[in-house]
Length: 327
Image 1 (cartoon, one colour):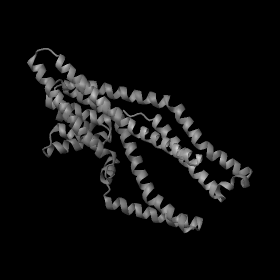
Image 2 (cartoon, rainbow, N blue to C red; image 1 turned 135 degrees about the vertical axis):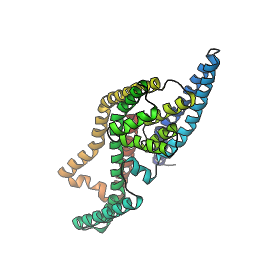
Image 3 (cartoon, helix red, strand yellow; image 1 turned 90 degrees about the vertical axis):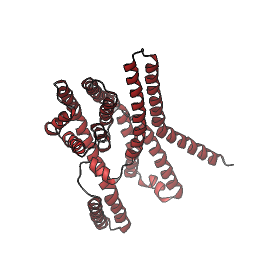
């Protein structure tokens, strides 16, 4: 067999293995963390004293945590690919599906006409219509989602502190949530208003707080729902639990800032490495276009471009996974 074919097969297998490792590592690590956490809780329960009330509370805590873990896995699967209406709601838009598709269609037609008139090529216009009709609206929705989530994270620790102060002063949890809905900034106020509306319709406070994670898919919102649900099921000092949660939220925010600062060097290296081929290619095209034209005019040059683009994309993808940290 030709040595070139063997080399290509080996490179393809190596690339597939690298991509699979990058995609599955986080999932395997998360499952291991869950198993270790349940093991520690079980060991603590078996090593505890003979207090009957404490033993019963530990048993309730373990059963509640197992139930939350199962619900969490189901929610995580659903939140990975949320439907369009959920993404619009998470972005803070009151659009319907029809409104979104009408807007996308108008934007696609406008992009088609502009690109067609500028380039004079109908195929280029159709490509622009696909980008303008499908890519750009989804990018805008995702951008609004990320911006709204960032604003939520900025205000959420203050809201938790407000609940802690209200509970310590003797107010019930429902009144504290109403206070957040009226006195905090958006989008925290609107999210907690939805919790109040849900409780007025008969939903329990713990279930309404856990629904917050579906509208705001952040681990901080998930922690809040879990703390409220565990307190409702197993009892305990809610103000102390929420106070610890507030400290954890602020520590996570500090850690994110430190990681962002420490990873800037790797990000800058990735930007430089990713843009270097295009810069060098442009300079070569400006100085000696006949030399680089072989990449575009010959079949072998086209294959080299495709292969280089593929492996460059794999390298950039692996670098992104290396500097991405999930909390």
